[in-house]
Length: 165
Ligand SMILES: CC(C)(COP(=O)(O)OP(=O)(O)OC[C@H]1O[C@@H](n2cnc3c(N)ncnc32)[C@H](O)[C@@H]1OP(=O)(O)O)[C@@H](O)C(=O)NCCC(=O)NCCS
Image 1 (tube, rainbow, N blue to C red):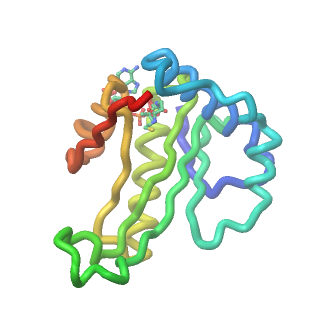
Image 2 (image 1 turned 90 degrees about the vertical axis):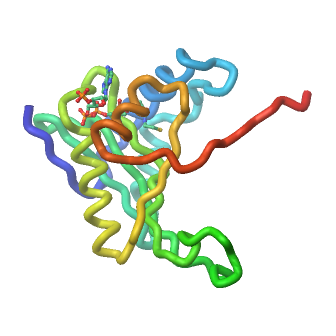
């Protein structure tokens, strides 16, 4: 299959909504207490987003044989203004933040996820980013090996949670 990554554009809403709902269904199947399938994630919502200015943020679409099967959104985080007084070094760096990466389940393992993330990393480097950060659900048996084994990411933090009600 031929993989092509390019900036997302009006008309991609259908494929983007499909990939988003597929990811929602997958996560809800893994852990229905913490994930749900959003009722509002329709193609029109994505078209509206695609029509808005993104102020330098990155929004990429991946095509497999000409069909939009996945997308990625990312942005640059500049060094934190109070970095000099912080103990975490990376607050002083320019960072690439990946906010979302989804590929329609029917099209997994054809290289779309790799192509999207590789293109985003290249964009981040061009913008001066020294590091790329993202998070994923720790119980996801697909994304964890994707990031760690295939894309070379390292675990950097643990997010704890406890129900109060
Ligand atoms: C994680 C994700 C983006 C990967 O997209 P993809 O197009 O399948 O990725 P690629 O084809 O480039 O890479 C395939 C790798 O992904 C992982 N993977 C994909 N499908 C998998 C499956 N069914 N079982 C196990 N691992 C899988 C593996 O690491 C695989 O590498 P391998 O074939 O060498 O074992 C995709 O599975 C996805 O959208 N998942 C649901 C949403 C999600 O978890 N997003 C990321 C975190 S929020």
